[in-house]
Amino acid sequence: MPNWPYNWPYKGNPDLNLVELNKGAHYYAYSPVLSTSVYTEAFANIVLPTAFQNIPIGVSAQYASRNGYICLGLRGQRPSGDSSGVDIGLLNTGNGWRPFYYDVASGEDEATDYSEDFSDYIASSSATNAIIVVKPMGATSVGLYVRFVNSAGTTLLTFDQTLPVNYRASWSQYYRFASLIPSLSTASSINTDSTYMLGGQFTNLGLYNQSTGVYYPWGLYSTSPELISDYWTVYHPRCNVTYTNNSDSFTIDHWA
Amino acid sequence: MRKICVVILVVFLLFTSSLFPAAAETDDPDNPVFVGGEEVTLSAWAEEDARLAAKYSLMPQYPLLEDYGSSSNTITDYRQPITRAQFVRFALSYAAVMNHSSQSTFQHLVEVLRAEKSGASIRFPFTDDMTSDVVVAYTLGIVEGRGNGVFDPNAWITRQEAATMLYRTYCIFGETEDEPGAIRFPDKAEIAPWAIEAVSILQGWSVLRGMEDGRFDPHGYFTIQQCMVCFLRLYELAPVSWQKGNVTPLFSVEETVKGIEAFSNLSEISLRLDGPLATFLRTDTSGVMIGATRYYLVYQIGGVRDLPEALPSDDLGYPLENVEFSEDGEILTYSIILDADKHSMYQGQKTLLYEQGVYHVMIDVGSCEMTVTKEA
Image (cartoon, rainbow over all chains, first blue to last red; front, side, top):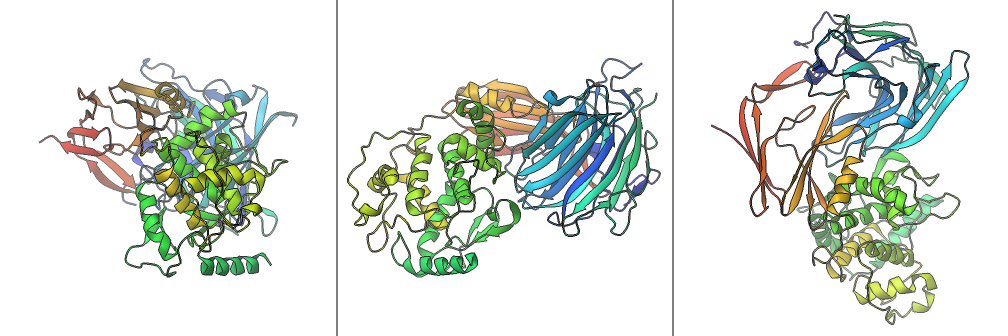
C-alpha cells in the first residue's frame, strides 16, 4: 500500500478512499468475507460518548457543524459485482443519539439511496448506553434493533425495525465505525475546529454464529476465529482507539 | 417431498408447453437472454418474447431468487413455476414501464407517496416477507395477503390466480371499459367466480390464449416464462399502454418532486430547473461517510428517469454551471468546471479520474442519452 500513511494505526489491507480525508477523524473495522447465514447478526453494547461537541469553536462561520456516527454496517454484493455497505447505527446532529441507516446506491447500478434519520427516536440525555443488533434479513432488507438504557440499566427507548435497502445478491461482511463528519460536504472543513466526541465505546462486541449458538468476540485483534481483517484510523491521533478482545474505546478530538 | 413435487411439475410443464404452441424446448446458445446479469433458460417458444420484454425493460431488474428470505439462490430456469414473490418482480417492472419511470425510483416513489394513502405501512405488513418489493406491490393493490399477516411468498400461483394478479396490475393504470365477454375456454366451468372477470377480459385482449388443447387449465401452475410473456402481451395488446400514449401517470410532476424530496431526510434538492418537457432535479446527501448526488428528469407527461452522473464521483457530485434546456425542451445542457485534476484511490493506489478543465454535458431529454465533451 504505497500511499497509506504508515503513522496511522491500521491492520490488514485498508480500503482508504480519498473521500474519507474530508470526513474528519474516524476509524473503521471490517470483518473478513464470511457467510452471513452462519454469522447471522452483529451485536454491541455501545457506551455513548460522555462529551460531544459538534459545533466548531474559534473558527470562521464557513465551517459546518458536524454529525456524530457510531455505527455497525453490512456489506454485500451489488448486481454490478461491486461490493457496497449499509451504515446502520446511531447518529447525533447535536440534539441526541438516534437510530440511523444509510444505503448509498452504487453508480453503476440503477438504484436509489435508502436512508433515514429516525428523529422520532432521539434518546434523552440520561441515556448512557445503546444495545444494538444489526442483521441481514434478505436481499433487500436489514434489521436494526436499538435499545437505549440509562446508568441504572433501565430501558428508555426501543427501536426495532426491518429497513428496506437496495438489492444485494449476498451479504458478506460486517463492519463498524465511529466518526464526526462535517454536515455539509460542500462546506470547508478542517480537523482543528475544536469539535470532539469523547468517551465512546463499543463493548461486548460479538458476531453471532447460528451454527454454534455462540457470540464470538469481535475485537480488533480477537482470534479463534479472527473476525476483524481490516482496521484503520484516519487522522490519528485525532482519532484514537484502544481495544480489548471484545471492545473498542475511541476518542475523536479535532483540537485546535 | 416438495422437491419431488417440483421435479414432477417441472417435467409436466416442459412436456405440456402450456399456453403456447408446441416447439422444441431448446435454448439458442448464440443469443442468450440475461436478467440482472444472469443468463436465463427458456423454452424455445419464449426466447424471442424474452428479448422483446428485455428491450421494453419488462424483465425484473435483478435475478429472481428462489426464496427472498435467503438471498443467495437465484432462479434462472424460467420454465419453472413462478412463486408469488417472483410474480411481484415482473409486475413491478411492468408498472415502472407503464409509469415511464426507472424501476427503483418508481418503487421508492410508491413507498413514500402511496403507502399512507393506501393505509399500508411503509414497513413490512407481512410477517413472512421482508422485501420492499412486496410492500410496494401490496400498496399498489397487485397482491393481497393470505390473512393474519401472511403473504406466502414462496407459494406457486395457479393460472386463475395469475389472471387476477395480471389484471390487478393492469388496473393500476387503466380501468377497462370492456365488459367481460363470454369465456371461450372449454373448461370455463372450472374457473372460480372470483377469476372470471379477469380471465374473460385478458382472453378478450389475447393476453391469455389457453393451452395447446384449448383449455385454460385454471388450476395448473403458472410458469415464470408464461408470466413474462403475459406481461409483454399486456403491454402490447391491452387498451391502455405507455406505448399507446394513453396512460394516466400515477404521480404529477409536483407529486414526484415531493416524493423525491421525501426519499430521505438526509438529502435535499439542491437544483431544480423546469423545462417545457421535463423538470431537471439534483439531490445531494451530505454529512455522511460517502455523500451522494442524484439527478432526475421528471416528465410533464408523467414518469421520472434517473440520470447518470456525467463525471461519476466518489462523494457529492461536482457543481454544475450554465444549466439550461433548449427552447423546445428536448436538450438539457450544463458544464462542469474542474479546477484541478480529480483522483480516486482504491487500496492505496491513486488513479487519475479526470483532468482539470471544462466539461460540457448534453442530454437528450427523451432518451436520456448523454454526451460529455472536454473543452480543448
